[in-house]
Image (cartoon, rainbow, N blue to C red; front, side):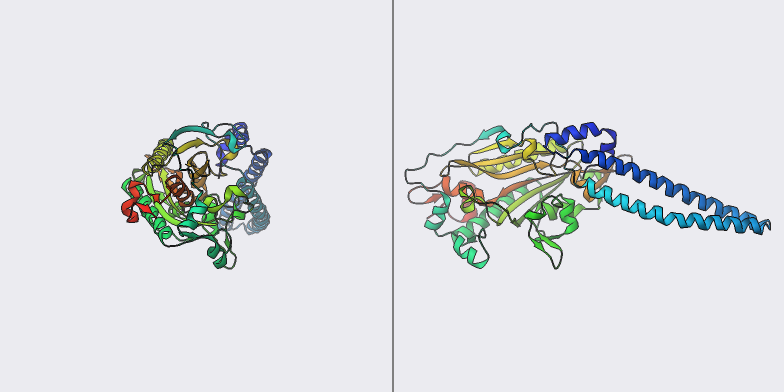
Length: 423
């Protein structure tokens, strides 16, 4: 959530930055500022009235001590009238504060000055590419045929058990999932991240705190009886670990990693481009999260990007890094780099990670703070990234490493998988 003081100090800048995100309702800034002014006037009226009550109440005591009973009774009536007027002011103040909050949460985060202009994914900017695209044999096929050939993922039975988009991993497919998860976690913990195993459901406040609500409620599975949401990513529960906490400045940055299944409705996602593992409703992902000092969060962001890049290099996958344009960024992000791997059999790039700096947007909602050198609480910055999402990694590994006889696994995975190939 944007800080009100930013809107007060420079509403023109706020509107200009929102336009980079192609946010059309910039008039909302003016609405918020009007409500803020109304709130301040009501607060001043309430405080002044309360001060009069306190002042006159003191006078009454003095008048009674002097034996001026009639004057004291008259002042009591005045106090009574003032107290009666406080409740309507308080009710109106609460109403305006609620309206202000409801409007404020509709504003997305402001994009960083580093965000390129643009409206669609076609406007994203390629920062760099790495790895080598493989040359496949003449009979190479996409992963949805490979998983049937080697009997490692069963979409039909998954659909019978649950529904479309819920794959059933089996045999070497299940083993490959486990190997990738363990390797990713080991890679992250070796870089100083503390591992967590979070709950797979969160309450409404947790979803609100990281920006999933009110922006993405249509994409989350909702447990109506308990008012819980299935997590779309481990970012949600892990970042909320420090909600309403004041951490030591010396403890920053706080580095966390977690594996979890992720659940996304992906409403309206159909077509050949989402075939097989390209887009599913349940998938496994390992996440990295950092809580950082505001002065250092962009250095931390680059370090996280480099961390994910090293992970992809170790998997021997061709990849590219894109700076997302304003129109393709998430509601809460200030700057995002996407990672894509090249799927040789599909001849297309597949997104496998987003690494984002949210600046103080999430921290303001969660009240994640630290005390500066003067002992004053300050909002921290939060960051997160996929390290990595498994379905498209698996798709690329299967497709890019296929031969006519088997699928070769990258060297770093062989000890985790217990074999060099899937055959």
